[in-house]
Image (tube, rainbow, N blue to C red; front, side, top):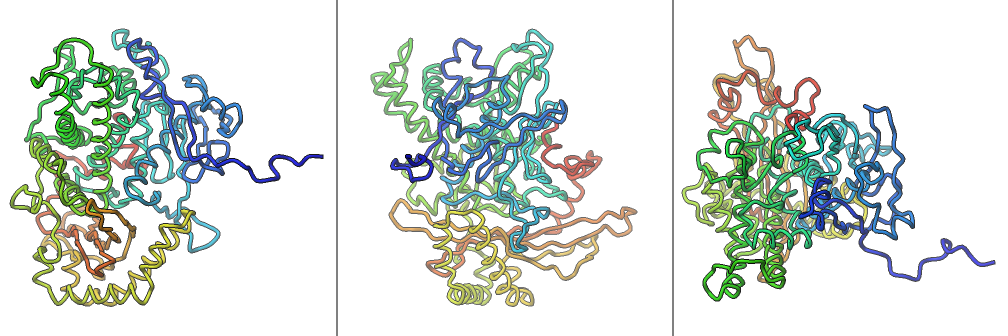
Amino acid sequence: MSEKSTDKPSPYPKPTRRYLRGYAFDPSLVTQLENAPVSVLIYKIKWEEALSAGPCGEYLEVIDVDPASNAYYDPVNLNHADILAQNGLAPSEGNPQFHQQMVYAVAMTTIDRFERALGRRAFWADNDNAVAKKPEENGFVEKLRIYPHALRMANAYYSREKMALLFGYFPGTADRSAGVYPEGLVFTCLSHDIIAHETTHALLDGFHPYLLTPDSRNREALAFHEAFADIVALFQHFSFPEVLEHQIAHTRGDLSSENLLGQLATQFGHARGMRGALRDAIGYYDQKKQRWVKREPDPLAVISTKEVHALGAILVAAVFDAFLSIYRNRSLDLMRLASNGTGMLAPGALHPDLVRRLAEEAARSSSHVLNMCIRALDYCPPLDLRFGEFLRALITADLDLMPEDELKYRVAFIEAFRRRGIYPSDVRTLSEDSLRWGTPDEDPVMTTNSTARKRIKATLKKFAEENDVRSRIDKLRHLQERKKVWLETRRIEEELSGALSDLIQPDTQLQKLLGLTIAPPKDLTLIDPTKPFRVNGLRVARRLRDDGRAVNHVFFTLLQKAVWKMPDSGDSREQILRAGSMVVWDLEASEITYVIRKGLTHQQQVREAQLDEDDAMSLADTYFGAQKELFAQLHHSGA
């Protein structure tokens, strides 16, 4: 009797990628003759050997419960031979198993995008409700849950409370002139843009969990979360070769004109009666003119705009402007060759070879822009983030990796942000040297506290040697299980926190150097005078610069909070104020490279606490509401 094939190892190489069919944008393109050829594509995602029905893998668990219909849909088994043989289930609006496949494919694509840019594993935010069998594993969230049919409403959101993505479905507008099937069901779980957007919220929350908290008072931090999620969704469009070439041909190479690549959630927008996409990085549908209009930069809008999505759209437009400038510069030679040096293309369709080459340049440009944006997260302050600070993080991260910048990518970003009126508040010029976070020899706080700087350097060097930090961090890069990486990272955090506490707690110079000072305003009473701090969010990055030298950095945050209340105000509510810094530690030199501080000054505290006179309640009340779901409220007006 022959042995079963499952009892002996396979003689064949193991696959590295799983191929799954899905919508390129959303189902609406399938019924448009012009866009139907590129409406469906094949997602190439990481092969997960232990993937079970759901799908349920290392990062994600899809659970298809529909509370509104009191239904539970059977989970799809993507390892079934029939499904594997045809690159996944065929796209279908009426098949719940395809809906499960779609959310899994796009979410895994987004996770892969982050991991490639950062060169390390992705993690979800720690959750106090996650209690493990081993106490040291408490808080670890292994899988983000995804509910494709969780809500019967025009919304989708990331739930920090449930550590899940919840997608809604709803009947579209009855307006027959809106360009959609009247009152037809629209599933947000079938939109690439909405899935990528919500997955990015979860990834960003795992990266910087204190950017948004129930006590947030910063509109730009709220808007940044929305904007960054849109940026990732937008630039993933450019990783689809068929779609990219189609749109290059359609626009004749001019991606600053109306096109699908710059639009987000088209079906959702039309179904809501908006006559256009939910959001557009390039233009908008003008109701009066009844046509699409290109949006011109307004340097004053960032000051006057209060609605969070509209404010975030300014940042998205700035990043997209930078991409367009880079793409134009990279394709200038092609345009000259195709136009005999005039720069003006002859009428008619572009040659397929030119379309292909322009698409290649657009893909390279967009990939580099997205990588710059994701890597900048390592250099952002851990809380109270402003748009101008994100620009500084972008410039610093890219300077560390690409000192030469021959193609002037950084100049394109600086110019695009300037045109949109986005400026850092604490620099004298917009040169790259000024925008870069201050090194130890340039940082005025560190140069005026040279003794404190020497003490912190000696402490870190001693800590690294006594705890074998370099060897342990090298091992982190080779660990296969995310839980083991998380556990070892937490051990290093706790050890580092203990080493720094004894040194920093009694030393006001060191507290100032590391951004751990909360100076009480005159009109606030301090309730918690201990002001403890802790090390949080430790992560590593070993990257190869363009000159061949390896950059071996450790990033960690130092966070501190204090509780305040307004005296004699009749308001018994307390305020939580946080301060801290992002510390960049060069392991090779045993030196702190940057300390990106986020302390609170008297002016900041008063302004943040009061907000605007016409605000009836704090942003925390506005967006958290009774259910304390920040992202649900943030998306209340749309996904």
